[in-house]
Length: 357
Image 1: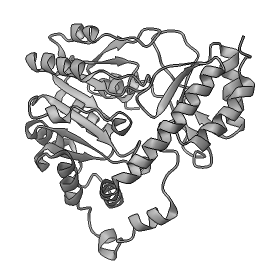
Image 2 (image 1 turned 90 degrees about the horizontal axis):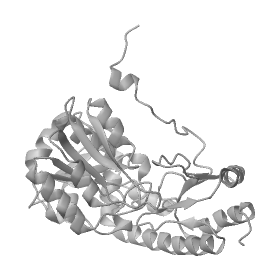
Image 3 (image 1 turned 90 degrees about the vertical axis):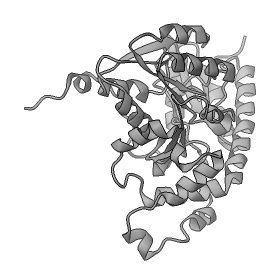
Image 4 (image 1 turned 120 degrees about the vertical axis):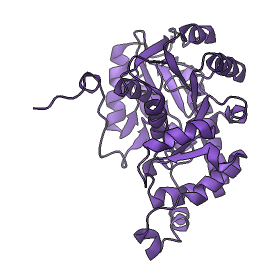
């Protein structure tokens, strides 16, 4: 029997549900939990024609819209099948065996997966028990073998952010040592601060975005990277010829033309977040500040966590339970959404929590 490479054989992946999520309250993957109305969906697909279905996809229009949105030339844009593929292509383009990748611990799980696939070493910068972190620790971890520094901002699952000042310091340090600096802005609309205006200054920086979170299009697997043509021209060599399907491109075009839909949903999430944080505080549950559409909560002990997970499962509510932190914890992550969905969650949580003393 042929054997895989050691980096693949020893890679640990956590399986995820492959069916049954549509019928539940999906608070486990930080998606848009409301979706679009049937009328909007019909409008999205109104121009599907025989040629649209029979021809290979034409991504040019989406490139134009993304470039216009960011006031950049199209050569600074790379459309991909989800932002995670943009990240993978960057890693595979610039990492070799023995190189090092610096990222936060915990952070986007695929940073480590893609580093291992390339035979690179992961250098993790751990959060403290209060989710404290110093940019000095990141700077200190950058050494002669460092090839990429990857920062998700906001970071998943912590919901924390680095300030623009800290990110600029990292960009300058990476530039000085010829290190590629990748900033993943998957949760941008919930935290509307971005590094893309600095791309003209830092030729070593790549910013990635997704259509899966606030934009409500997780199922179509669409994202993009912004960066210098020098970097993206190499990264593009890894893409299949027709790598994004035509429906993804079409729906991406639609949502960029209707950004009011994004703003409306973000406002609903903010309202839901305020409700959940206030109610959990009243119930004596510790939460952590978040700049994204999810909330990390500390359930205190294993029996309470076990009861809550069982109650939510019974009520058809999915939570994020695989929270890999560098310290012992009883945390869960909940995706945030409109008030009605958050009230449904709180109705299940409250009876399972110990009384406040």
